[in-house]
Amino acid sequence: MKNAFAIVTLSALMATHAMAQTPVAPADAAASPSAAAPTAPQEAAAESKADAKADAKAEGLPKVELSSDLLYKLTRAEMEFKSGQWQGPYVTMMVAAQQTRDPRLARRASEMALAAKQGSEALAAIRLWRELAPESDEATQFFLGFVVLTDKIEEAEPIFAERLAKAPEGARGVALFQMQQILSRSNDKLYAYAMLTRLVQPYLDMFEAHLVLAQGALSLGERERAIGEANKALAIKPNSELAALTLAQVTGEPEAANKVLAAFLQKNPDAVEVRGAYARLLVEQKQLEPARDQFLLLLKSQPDNVGGLYALGIVALQLEDTKGAEQYFKRFLAVLDKNPGDARDPFKALMILSQIAETRGDTAGAIAWLDKVDNSASSGYVEARLRRAQLIARGGNLDAARKALTEIETDDPASQAQVLLVDAQFLRDAGYVQSAYTVLENALLRFPDNPELLYDYALLAERLDKLELMEASLRRVMALAPDNQHAYNALGYSLAERGIRLPEAHALIEKALQMAPGDPFIMDSMGWVQFRMGNLAAAENALRRAYAVRSDPEIAVHLGEVLWQKGDKAEAQKLWREAQSKDPKNDALKSTLARLNVSL
Image 1 (tube, one colour):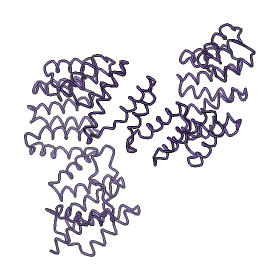
Image 2 (cartoon, one colour):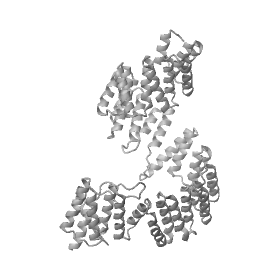
Image 3 (tube, rainbow, N blue to C red):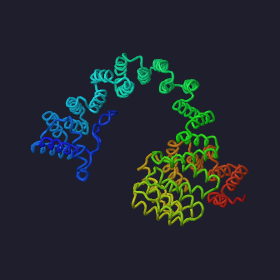
Image 4 (cartoon, helix red, strand yellow):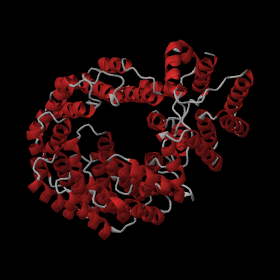
């Protein structure tokens, strides 16, 4: 009983002190052998369960008496490791593993070395772990993954050969695929492929052997060889969907892949995976109607296939068939409701249905779909709730919209900042500029380094004639988010609009335009600063390009003023009338017409 108790206690000790985080392995290494361990309080709360598991794990392990000396050494090693040391704890675990012949201690040493990014020491510990637990598939897998990534890849070959030879006939195909996956991580692709070729020689009568050779050849860029191997696989097993999909993949050309999949489906019309891949390939090639036909065939054989229903909804949207899209997405949601265990998040489908309802003017219907995103664990919960509030605000009920924002439950700081940002936007759009400014001023006390809050705060500061604060906020955005073209554009346009520091304004807008050369509003800013600098030809050119991309009233106002100054008053008035028809209350248009004493 003494030994049995010692084994249980040692298991508990190892579990208690196991690393709480995943060890840092070399890039692309196999998964760490360590699993996140429970904390000491958690283990104490589940003591009986832990003991039962420990008893089960103890089978086949050496009977080690947990002496006070060994307990002290292991506990001290763990405490030192937690404090940031690795070498002493690693040595302690290695020595203890060699003395006790307990593979768990070697495994723990490997975790410590990996966490410290000590490759040689990690490999030594993994070797010992495997030596002490020769039947452990986990130890072998980790050893293989590790040596393949180092210059010791040749050590993997005899192990792979033995594993393939010992694998039952029905499981050998899986073993071949696992081997190819591990070898694909090697830095020495040529050596790895040569090893792969040698290892599969006894199994060339299996279609899986040719598939792994095809994948390996493709990784080397040897497309012709990859095609040849995939064809051999298909010849051995003509109805293999995996072989057909591999052949389509290695062809490298969408049209050739189409032919492969279409030919396979002619002979194997019930091939669900191939038909799904063929349909997705057609979508990628913008062949939407043929893709829809393929998805419909899939749906005939699998009416409740949620992937097919969702895909049909997306294709219908792209074909501008909103009624069809609505039907497919509703069916998609109905199937999910019948299968509560399905891990798919219905958020995107609900958002699309909401947008469809909104497009046809059914605001209540749009809100009803958003109300179904009621799980705060959903990836789109906050987005759906914000959209719901925006729809309420658009209906003119500012108080209800703001109340809806206060009901959003989130612990995420970025989402909390977004809620405050939207609240300020509601107030600004309703004409309560000072109130919107105050909301953002308070928000920045909580989130001082949020670029979105700072950007909107700067724009409101400008409207309140707080120009120094506006510029300081925009420059803070530039520091926090150097690739934010809107901050450069906003400051440049503000300077240009006031007719000051025009060379600096031009430089800021030019930088923004380099970041987003196709943005019509930045093109508009460039045209406006050119106008302010007296470069009428350059201004007209920039503004015409901007208006061609987006016929926005504000761009029309600017282009009209440039043309007015050039003497083309008829064309200017035409543009202003267009702007007036789109936005009769446009402030820029009103002020321009008043300044130039023009009536339309």
